[in-house]
Length: 92
Image 1 (tube, one colour):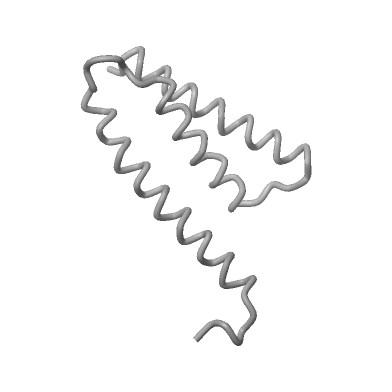
Image 2 (cartoon, rainbow, N blue to C red):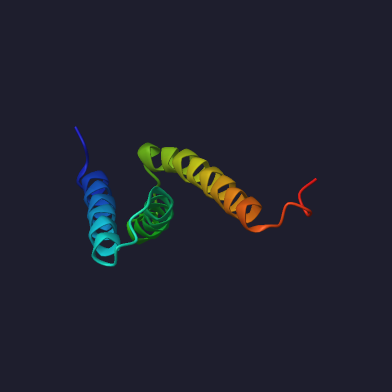
């Protein structure tokens, strides 16, 4: 059974992701890269906004792995975009 705090986190993340899709769709710039980046930002924001004061539940410790995985994905996305922008003479 999910706790109320966990459900608040899930609802917050889901609301952020739906708002991201709507926002990007309205401005005609919906892409997988932008959605991933905005969702990762949302994950970090919602994680901080729903952080408990004293005791850290076990389910929140698993968020560290999800955050780390998201940051690795973001780093690979930035590296791919950087390689696409650089001229071929610079890349060995």
